[in-house]
Length: 239
Image (cartoon, rainbow, N blue to C red; front, side, top):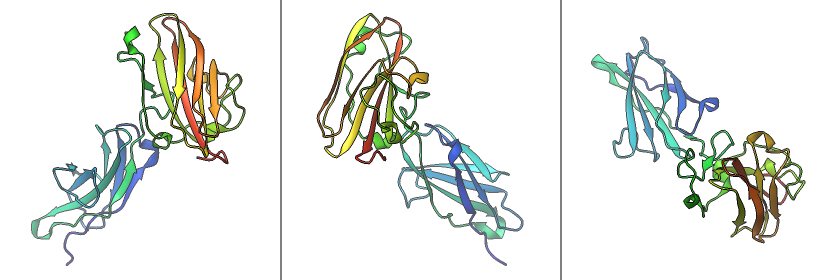
């Protein structure tokens, strides 16, 4: 008689991955199936069950779990073992399955909000600065940025990050994008709505040689929300 066998075909439903969760399923080839399973979701590989790096959950009577409360833009490593009980005890851990949660700012549906309190914009929300890599945010748009954007090439075929800003007053904004690579296409595009992305810009700027982007004289109205899309591709307009 075989001892308790580890779960197989552990699967991440890629369509379920969000900024804070994902759906996991697996198969049990024990006969009868185990009554319980332990799911270990870790932020470092190779340490299933470690309470310092993993969240460990007991699942009863199910071969799936919906993970919640995760951190956006984070790599997770999932291991599962069967808890057969009795003389068979517990199985070893399954093969690792890795996935990354979606980063906040990856799409206009879940943008990076510049305002400290988006329901109560104040002048102190600006200036705003951020540094990083667009590849963290993935590619959720495609094609050209739209009319009046300063460039007509398919820069949205690469990686994009979306920011949302609501002004507390009528204002004129200036946006600078610096420290750009010399071998990439980078664009900064301003829109009045999510639906305008890929269609029409309030303003825009573009660089293909590392020159900083400066978009100035952006006239905005009090109480209106604007979306800023920072997009990049390599020099062939691929991510």
